[in-house]
Length: 313
Image (tube, rainbow, N blue to C red; front, side, top):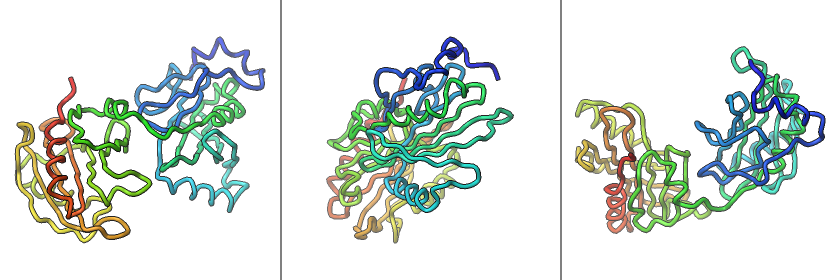
């Protein structure tokens, strides 16, 4: 693999204790975890994080469920020396105590070093995965990566406009939902009256996203929609109360409603699933849930959001 072109002029930095950094922490769009990338890395075009100009150095940044941090911390404490050649370490960051690993591996035929770090966040765990080819390790040393990790910082909120802009469709009506949270950048988003700290189940919320290939035949679509609705995570004791084809913004769709219970308190909820089928490409899937005693006003808001979703372009 060729030496990374943007780094060639920086070779003298290898002799210094700490390579040069950009001035401020950078947050990938839609995420609450950021850090100061090393010089030579810029915001990645196809994933959340940073990369070199030729794409061989990668820094993936993402969010995991809040329990993930505690699970990793317990694993580190039970085996502080690491296993199978994986070196374990920890470091203080502005985000809190971070745990990270270092190991050698292969990316195809290329020898690489890999680093993984997890930090605590407010309602989430921040995760970073770094991959560096061997021919770049004199520039991106272990100490350089450690210092980049040490700059990790979190933010409590991401502007709704920033998150919505990442979605592959326009959301023109938020129906007074105040808590907007990306579930997967550029793929799915939640609109809610509640929040992560109190739990979403006790108030109306919606999840908007795209799904892959869907059936083309009417009977197959009916079966697909019902099976998908009965497998919605977090809803138990599910019972289909309605399932029928509809038109959604002029396109063929399917509406399925289920009654069930949700959350640790087994809150009785009604859930509606809308699938707006596409003849080519991904289809839109909307899941909207409300406690049964809040269903009627919530359903009006759900439909307002649904009908305000428009294609980009």
